[in-house]
Amino acid sequence: MTTTAVRRVPHGRYRFAQAARMEWIKLRSLRSTWWALPGGIAAPTLGQPGVLRAVVLSGAGYCLIGLLGLGLGAIIRHTPAAIAVLVGGVYVVAQMVAAFAPAIMPYLPIAIVANSLGVVQPVPIEGQLHFLSPWAGLGMLCLYPAVTLGVGAWLLARRDA
Image (cartoon, rainbow, N blue to C red; front, side, top):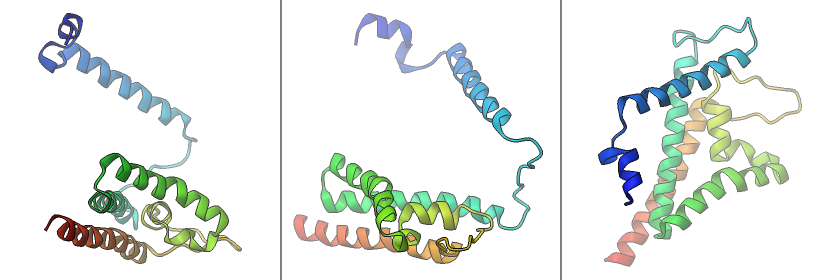
């Protein structure tokens, strides 16, 4: 480590002024998004029907996608490759599959999180896809990590036994 790095951040800790400046920058960026929102739209509260469920299931959905990555890591046994397969499969390939085979879209992990778990009340549009209900979406999303973790555990026991 160079002497300039030691002087800038002593012992790997931030000083109070540096931490306060970073928090001020985060607050300013948050305020800029508030001003960009249209006026007259009231923010939902957790007491409204479906809002608490949407908040909790959205977090659970991303946790399940993380467990999917853990299962892929156990299967592939190479960290960068597992990360690439997770990100590429969940985010990139899912969009391409949805473009070429829209009937599969309601069953893709990121679509389940965005359209089934994270909405308070889905609005069906005539002629559009109908996504899974929140609890069916959660069940479908639980299958993906269960399968990858099961296969990963089986392969890990077989390879390292």
